[in-house]
Length: 356
Image (cartoon, rainbow, N blue to C red; front, top):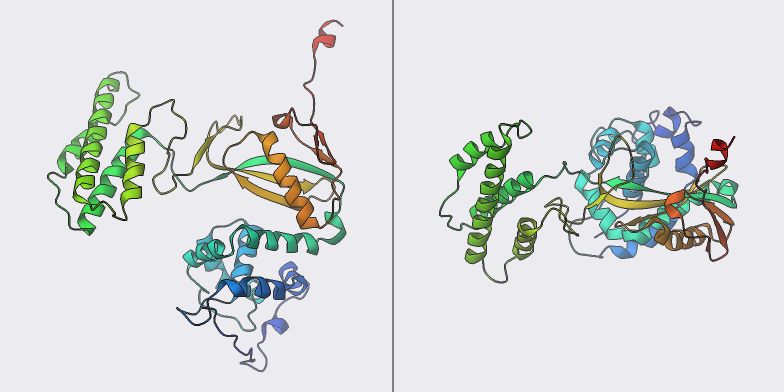
């Protein structure tokens, strides 16, 4: 249910935010050029009319999402900084300074799930409109990067221990019997798993890893026997069994229990060989640097993402303004998408220099 609009009344005669703030500040200017009404019209039907706790104002939630990406901070940080920054509050529709947090950080996750990809595209479309003529550059650049997930570097031993802890938590929550908790055994095995790179400890560490995996398999099978067939934990059991059965060179591996869709992506970076997350394709104008398209993918070949992201850019801009798109050699093999010419640099040939 969406909260009813409250009449914005000035509580103090002299301390209104609009009079206190610098009207030349970028966030002050931005708050007055954004068309907030279109977000209310688009997102209000997503709320029920008379059921549940009233939700937060749409302008507040959209403003927090905009601030999160402007400042490149997390959900927790943007909520905390909102209570300290008067410009943040004015952007989100407040007339008076509020010294409290506007919402819980998890509510931003629920709001993103509520509006979906269509809602995020609407916010991006408004960003393109605000930039005006700077968004109509016929020359654009397309590149992919990795949106990393909040997971630690995955190892088999770490995943197996997490499975053991998850099984114990489920059994305790559902009051299921466990024949053995292996608490002292796992503590001793933890000492054996340390310093595995030392030549004298490699064999001992491998045996400890195998023992931990065996214990994890026992607890998963015991949990599966004690749970009902239609239990809500069946999906979790499937993930645990997949992790225990996966091999080193398998495809579609699971690297995180709470984020099973994470992909292992190699972008050829010297300082970071592998990144764990999803691939993101971004289109931005060459002369002004305005982002006119952004889409998330799993881990496809870069050239296979061009069609979708260029179609999205055309839809957001409102016209087929992009004539040429410059890419790196990761897109080689694609020369033209619709009417857009794809420019890919060729490999530099040093053979003629050797003949000199």
